[in-house]
Length: 262
Image (cartoon, rainbow, N blue to C red):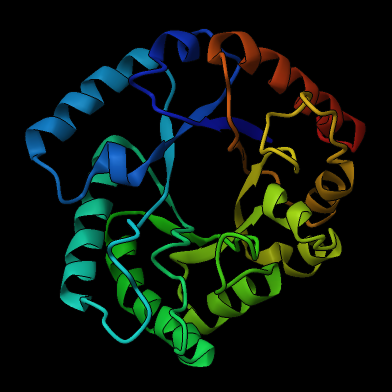
């Protein structure tokens, strides 16, 4: 299993350069900034190189102001934004973009949830070939019901992936969101063939592994039994990144080893 962290590669470069991580998961809106100036993007890439770790993934695909479902969707802007994001991702070495974006996909009051679900699939079918052209895979992230009201279970995420029916669209399992909603680890086993990425954090306050002592082993066991051995990102808060990251990784690696990951 490859372990990484969701953070800013440039601002956290000093702490990351010596950390025992395999990759960094950056932020689409802040790092790639698809609608921002080219010169600023180039400068962020230069600063991020000091982290001495590959930036392989980027999360937080769409800003909340760029809604992708509902009665007023600016499809031309969405496509232009995504095209720029995929192109910049390729240049930065990013091969996976996380489609969480809860605010952008929140179903408005009075709008049909079924129609919103169809809108997501329609958008993904349009964006998937654009992502593939740049060597990027989009991963659908089910979010807990407290953060979003569309695609809140692994089963729903799997349905989106299957109906989009394109290799550039796959599934993400976020153990934090699953634990928040008491979603069974068995869902990972059921949909493991579609998994391309995973996130983890402790349940109560989204803290790093080892802070509250959460037992992730039922979910990690499910990942192993599903044959998943790709990337797992710590998507959590740190008060002191330099001081807290290594103990968090040690705690997580201990649980990974206990369930059979080498």
